[in-house]
Image (cartoon, rainbow, N blue to C red; front, top):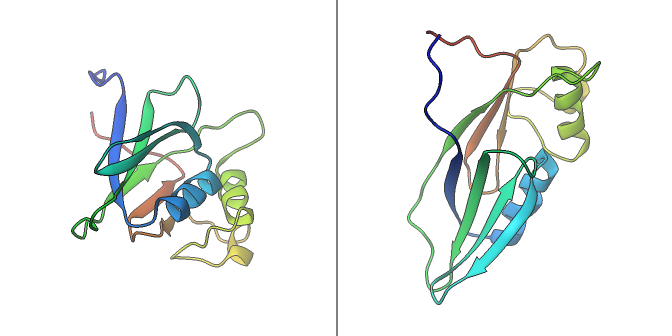
Length: 135
């Protein structure tokens, strides 16, 4: 298997409403690392963990809205002890995030390997039980 040459990743996401976007990403498990303002925009960098090499940067323009952008992401949760995929899905659901492909009441009963969420800007996130990559 090839090793990744990517050490870290920051995904830049243009948003129309920074406050509601930050609220959504906190529910999914991100925390705010830093916020920066310029004459043209306000940006908030968010991570899952302090030592994570993956971050998102939410940016809201101050003068005008961004052109329509939709971004999709695939995520695979880490298994920690007895805490696994379904526990992660249930926690996100309990935090108030609605899934596109199942109802909150179906989280523990449906044997799905993927749940789909949309953030306030229409960006699609799929949370996958496992990654079936090709070497």
